[in-house]
Length: 65
Image (cartoon, rainbow, N blue to C red; front, side, top):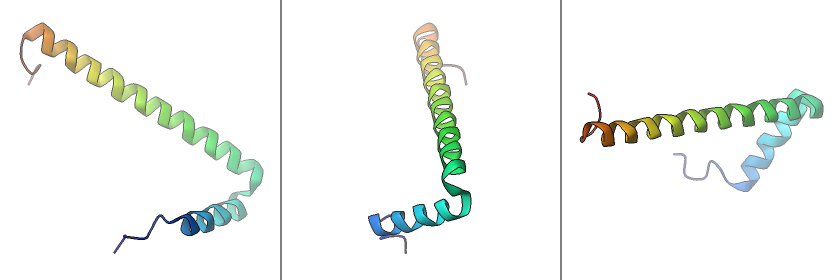
């Protein structure tokens, strides 16, 4: 069903539609905001996994349950 969904042609069409809807100025703001959100999410996930590793070492097992 979704085998060819993210082919380069499809992504180009999506980019053109986004450019028409948001405009070039707003599209850069949306991209910047999305990038900041992704960095924050990755940082939170990294901190969460580091905390679990700390619990593993501290409690000698798989952390708190």
